[in-house]
Structures are given as structure tokens and as C-alpha cells.
Length: 152
Image: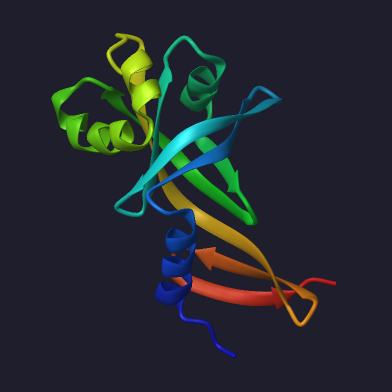
């Protein structure tokens, strides 16, 4: 059975929804770290806020290749800093963030050290089972390709 790239991508976004807590992995100089982040999904990208004095931000500045994990979905992408969370150009995204994470928004968003990070997706891998057999669905965002492989 041949898979449709757009259909499989839409299934991923439907599963994740507009907001989700995700594990974010960053690393630099042979030092990997991971933590849970309050993320929003907007226009096929993932966004979160963080402080410029935190290790994850420093690692992203040195190596902007990041990974996220939620449920049975693994995501690889490129992280970009979009400026301060209270910058005018970020107001639309931050309103969505506020809608889902009001306490976090109110606590941190107006701190001068807070920045908005955008993750441009490169690859998604989803695990699923059919008839008790494990499969992985690989979605290559850059090449708009999808494939499904049995894993045994």
C-alpha cells in the first residue's frame, strides 16, 4: 500500500493538535540534554519560549539541530530564534501560546531574557502497529516523501 505524503503529515498534525507538551533534546560539545517543553504548532512549525540564560538556548545557539518526541512520534528539525517573546512580530504566535499555556505566558513572556524559538521540521518518524506487527512511518519534510517499513 502506497502512502500519501500530505495525508500522513496531516495525521501527525491532527494527533499533536495545536499545543502539546514535548520532550526537546538539544546538544553541543558532546553534551546532550533533554527536557519537557510547552509547545505550540502553527503553520507546520513548532514554537516554544525559553530564556537566553538557560542551557537549552546556549546549546541551540551552538548547534541548532534539535529533536522532539511526543507519544510515538519522533521529530527532527532546525531551531531558529525569532527574537524576544514580547516583540511585535511575535505577538500572533504568542497569543496562541497564551491561549494554551496562560500561566507560563504570564510568568515568563514579558521577561527581557525570554525568546521565541521556531523549529522548522525536517523529518518525522512515527511508530505504529498493524495486526500486532511494528511499523515505522518515515516522513521526509524537505523532499515531501513518505515510506512505511516493518520493524522486526
